[in-house]
Amino acid sequence: MTRKHAVDQEQFIELAKGSEGCQSVALQSEQRSLHISEPFLVGETLVQLVEIPGFDDAANDDTDVLDLIAKCSHHLSRCSLKKGVTGIIYLHPITDNRMGRAALRYFNTFTALCGPGALSNAAIAFNMWNEVDEDVAERRSRELSDTELLFKPALDAGAKTFRHNNTRESARIILGYLAGLSTTRLAFQKEVPVSKRHWDVCDSSAGRVLSRYTETWGTS
Image 1 (cartoon, rainbow, N blue to C red):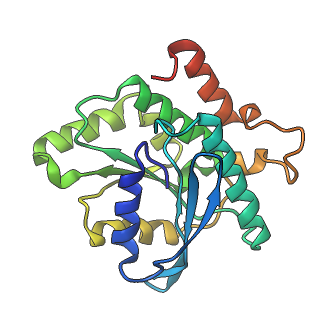
Image 2: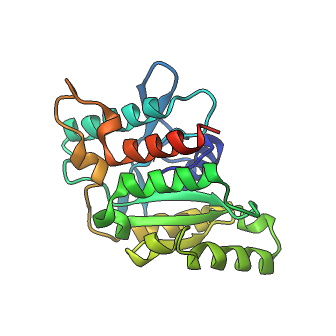
């Protein structure tokens, strides 16, 4: 799961798992941690969720987040989950009336993490749908979905949009859809070597996207 702000992910995970899978494994970096939930059932499918720290969190350096994702990839491989992931979720607040440069930078990093071959396993969840007038939410979702510089390329590559109104039911609908897909390997997983010696996460596709935005606009 990815999102700019960790609180959105935490709420989604708590809603989705309910009383199940309340423990998690934490992978540490110097400043932040990445959490992998204990397995829990969605229908008849056993699911684990990975909470990825936000790229625009003041406590993080962008490369620190990529390092954590690389550690997660290694951890999952050691746990014999070598087939990859079933899905990746991007949470976008429909309460935002525009998609600024920071959000655009983050979404483009998300698509680079996935790569073209894994975007069909991506779910773009319009978060906080219940907090906006229905007509406004519909208009914003259409604008985001139909605009070439925003979500349209990802949707054309197979990503799917969902409404998430901060309920257990809507969270489970998203997970139920992803649980029915075949596993895939994200571009970032393919790029991370078995041994990280002499390898820099900035050399990955996602790292290059972040570097390009930083050089152009800075980190704001």
